[in-house]
Length: 80
Image (cartoon, one colour):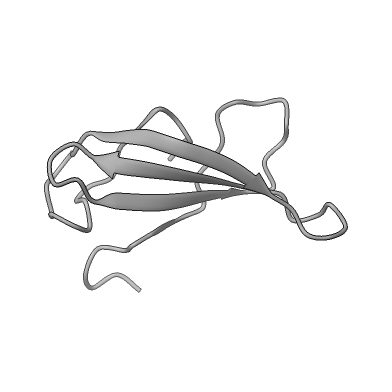
């Protein structure tokens, strides 16, 4: 998955809708005290149920606006 304006997640963990429209609400970057482990956090909201999901992209370069999402929360039921 790429960090974009509209996220594609199937099914959405809160309402189990297939192919929901998830719009980006906010985005923030964090690093450790020494400037390492850069992560880009993005919050998306579902247009169907109003639920939200948080994604993270690890070690993303500052020059690229589109990043590979490495994890997201919450997970669909039954996913470790």
